Amino acid sequence: MQPIFVLVHSPSVGPSTWHPVAEHLAAAGHRVRVPSLLRIGAGAPPFWPRIADAVREDLRRVPAGSPVTLVAHSNAGLFLPVVRAGLDHPVTGSVFVDAALPARTGPMPVAPPEVLEFLRPMAVNGTLPRWTDWWEEADIAALFPDPSVRRTVTEEQPTLPLSYYEQHVPVPDSWEDHPCSYLQFSPPYDGLAAEARRRGWRVARLPGAHLHQLVDPAGTARHLVELATAT
Image 1 (cartoon, helix red, strand yellow):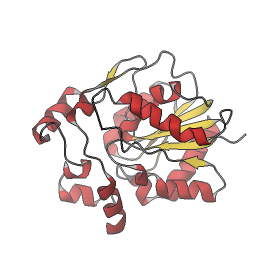
Image 2 (cartoon, one colour):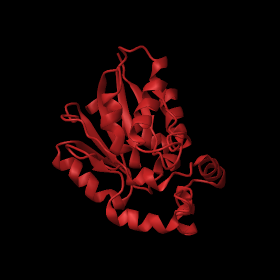
Image 3 (cartoon, rainbow, N blue to C red):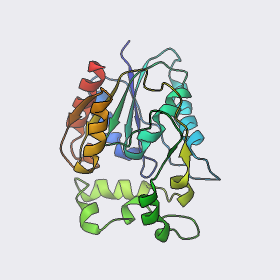
């Protein structure tokens, strides 16, 4: 049975960052799910159980025996081990896309100290601005293929609490006991792609910026299929 692609967006943005890729995968005959994590920032920490619950809840529409390929973008990579641990579905592979890598064993901080130092001055009453408001206009504009896509992604973004980035995520033992691979877009992820190679994972490169799945959804979909098939 062909695995279902489960495209997990970064909690810093929203599911629309995966919708164009999902459309290309579906057009090629693949089954796809894009769970929404937009409500995970409500309430008190820790937030990681709500991420795992959101993916599991989305997959309740899928028969439990159906295999899935998990695909995580950016910050969502840190949560893939706990997502996998909470599923009733067999996971045949995981693909990390310009993503943070979980530790081999946990727990692991969502943001390292230098990132928290950058974020804390931006928080107002414990809440951060939207992710696209963290950066210079020129840097953000370059991430999107056109103003319409930018508007959709920007309006959808949550305003997460600082405590989301201060949380530590458990890493279940032996979470790498299934095939994993890495798709790199942007130069800031050179080190993480190199770490994936050291772990023996298959690594592919599709040069672009961090939201390149919006710019080249067809190429991204093609690479996902190739990586999932190789695993």
